[in-house]
Amino acid sequence: MKIAIMLFDGVTALDAIGPYEVFAATMKCEVKFVAKKKGLIKLDSSMGYLHADYDFSEVDSADILVVPGCSPPNYKTPMNDQVTLNWIRQIHKTTKWTTSVCNGSLILSAADILNGTIATCHWGSFDLLRSLGTIPTDERVVRQGKIVTAAGVSSGIDMALHIVAWEFGEDISKGVQLILEYDPQPPFDAGSPKKAPALLVEQIRGMLQEFDKR
Image (cartoon, rainbow, N blue to C red):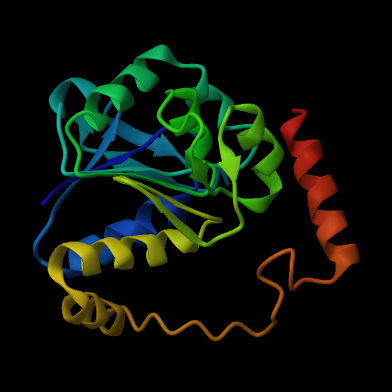
């Protein structure tokens, strides 16, 4: 299968690399990193880069489109860039699966792909997702027809494993999970606002809101 992972300056690395590792491990996929301009793509951490080998003009179709997210306020750039949004709309017409990770669903919403549908994103962006005409849910992976959205950063791995199972069968998806040794055993049970201490949730929510104002 042909997979296009969209990159943009300010992208969160794991949003893109998590699904990449899953799809690459199947040995059944051709994965391309695509951006408005090919070359180095600065990460939201400002501590490194990914590399886009293709620009939008070189990729006009894909079986699977992956739109990763970013930390606020970096999502404002792709959300307001008509060249980027038009490319997403064009690729979406050709896909078997159109997907997003984390705040990538905000970008899909800006491209008018999620209007009125149920989708997920990072929990800190639910209000913004709702303001864009999309119905947020705290499910980790949400499938609506051919559109699949994943919650916060690490959930892109789960999303990709689901798609591998749907396309190639559960045995191959289980094999990929084993290859990656994806067996989460975090030191703390604080990975969602439902589980984390209330004070911590409010502290992180406030921090995200401050970032969003920049």
